[in-house]
Image (cartoon, rainbow, N blue to C red; front, side, top):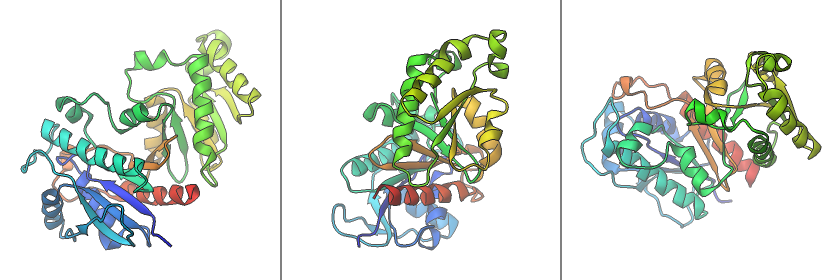
Length: 325
């Protein structure tokens, strides 16, 4: 039986991405029987491994050839030999994108079952002249309808919109985009064995609009979209008051909250599961997960970064890959 293949990207060289990636792979990786493929510059891998006193001399990945359990390196050259730490940098932004782009190409070509992406700097991508606001934004360009979702042992949450200014995000809280979102979310969850089936929708306004006294979006846009989705057989309900809807989903593995904008979902999620939460992109033909934290420039290079979220991202990638096989 062929070992599942999971690609890991190093993320921004100036942040904690290389550190948490190598820590996650220490001891052969968190899931046994997996072929791990690390996408990055060998110089960066060797430097980080020496600093952390961890193994870093991985054999080259034999792309497209039968492999087996172990850790391998897919060389992707970074633009500069020396890296800038602790702040966004165009060379680091370009390098992190190259690592990610190579892993996505391999997954699209059927050479990987999943990819796990270490954190990148959106500012660094912008400085490098890249048009995307992050991993999910890039993937949405390839697969329209891809959804950013978050998973922890106690809570599951998906986002209608993610890296948009709030003024733009609120413009998507309309019946048409909401109905499309519920349909895409059902498709994305359908292939996940044991995954959530019930979708809870928060309101946009305090107290879910209080019957129209605190806003009309619930009655004019959200509720009609929910009713239309239910008529199609989608198990969705709401709108619920946004300050209590997450309590309804807590410790209920079969339930997911469909948050209406980034901070409505991420504030409660990170409060509950920051250390072990995982970002997963739904609606792709391959699995993609990531830790739910950022580059943490302030602690980069100190060897103190917590790898638990990265480890859980690998574990979730393995679990989702098994569901899809």
